[in-house]
Length: 191
Image 1 (cartoon, rainbow, N blue to C red):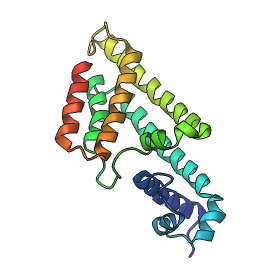
Image 2: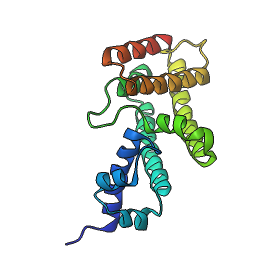
Image 3: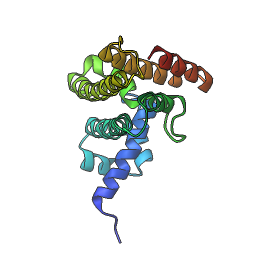
Image 4: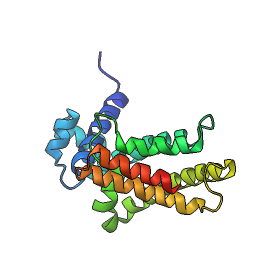
């Protein structure tokens, strides 16, 4: 029995997402995408129209799943705010074992956003979603007394985005776990 087309598309999209995450948009060849997805060249183009279309769909999938995960943790009112923020930082210190190094969003910001307004807009929308969630968590922490009332919630949200992005770049550049953990500890102390 043949698999449903939607299943095949989702599987191919996940595989392409990992390929782009590992090598970037420009460095990922169509042949690499064929090998990663198990699809032939014509199947990729029939399903996704172009390498660019496949990349955009992979990027949106990455942002949707990763940002939803972030929001879910940050909105978990059963846990103290500082514990939630620590969890988010720990994802960078100890990523999932099968995840490529770095972050597809951060990599794309550096590689494509400066010269691709459509991609830059997608990234900006995602960053705004993350900032709203982080700011809300920080505000909750300020209200509960976990975070100093004199702190600026938006500034801390920007600080956390910058810290996490920087840690992702450090990871991709070869920083070891103890170095990343020290950065996460420093960020927590700043809160």
